[in-house]
Image (cartoon, rainbow, N blue to C red; front, top):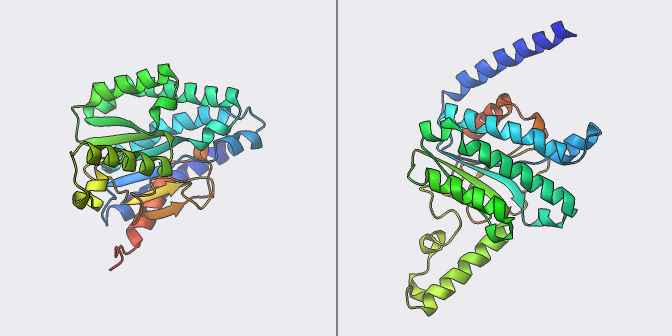
Length: 260
C-alpha cells in the first residue's frame, strides 16, 4: 500500500512539473476567484460531521494562497460563506464561522502576508457576522492596509445581488447629498460603489468552482461578466495544486474576445 501511495505521489509530482512548464508558456491570470464548494458532501461521504469538511477545507485555503503567490497571481478572491448559508442549522453556521475566524487569526500571524505585501479585505454584509469575527477581520485589514503587491479578498456573508443593491443604495444617498449627479453615473462610477472598489482590477480573469456544480451562485455577479469559468469535479477539501494548474492551463487555452 505504501509503495502504491509513493508511486502515485511520484506521478503527481511529474504531472505537476509538466503542468508548470505548460503554464509558463502563456500569461498567468492576474485575478483568480474561487468558490469553495463541496465541503459538506466530502464530510458526508466519509461519515464525518458536516463541519469537518470545512475544517479540512480551511487547511487547503492556506495552501491555495501559497500556490497563487508562487504562481504570481496578483489578486485572489475566495467565496467562503454566502448570505444564503445563514439558512443552515444554527449550530452548523456558528461552527463554520468559528472555523473561518480561526483561519483569519492564522493568516494574521502568517509571515507570508507581510513578506509578499498582501492586502486582506473582507467583502460582504459584514454586519451579519458575529462581533468577534468582525473584530478579527478589521484587525487583519488594519494590519495589511498599506500593502499593494497582492490582494486577498475574503467573501463572507456575501451575496452578489446584495452587493448590487448596496451599491445602488449608496449611489442614491450620494445623489441626494449632491455628491454625485445622475448624469455622472456610468459603469466606471458604479464600479466604485461595489465591495471590490479597492482593487486595481476587480474583474476576475478566472473563476473556479469546485465540487462539480456548474453555476456561480451569486458570486461577483457584476464583476464576472467576462470572466473565464472553470468547474472542477473535485471537492474543496481534496483540491490540489495540480487542480489549480489545470484550471489555469484551461484559462490560457481560451481566446478572450470580450464580446468583440
